[in-house]
Length: 218
Image (cartoon, rainbow, N blue to C red; front, side, top):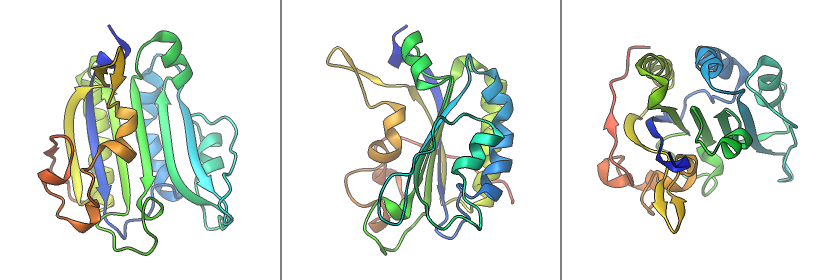
């Protein structure tokens, strides 16, 4: 099986503009705990990378990050965090280096972005955070259900304006390799070229076909 041809259940969550940021430790810790069991089922340990910047715009180095309490504490924000501007987070289980070595896409993938740092400063936002999570279908229906439940609870807590699902391969064959990978969806693959904050969040706004999911009561 080619790297890109593995099938995935993919979930999208667009949080309400006033939702508490998932990169806050108080928000991330319980959400991460709800995924610990899935991360443990992966064929190797997870790797995490986060792009954050100091007030002068210089990247903040975190060193090697995994999926554990010590690593979470390094990059998440608390009331004492004043010199970090969170932009994105990515988690691969197993790590991207293992995936490359195995020539197999990850068992579980997660990507998070801070909407306020992706476009024009001060513009009105329809959503404040975007989160993409994907789990390989061959991980089984129980794993899919666990991820779906964890995300549904998060979507309710965040008053998600969009909580949706699609099923697709990791990427699409192109030019002897592949393109349109799930890892590229967060920034460049979710929306049509127009500003998603300046148009209705309907089917025409998205590049792919998504099925909206019901939100449980928070």
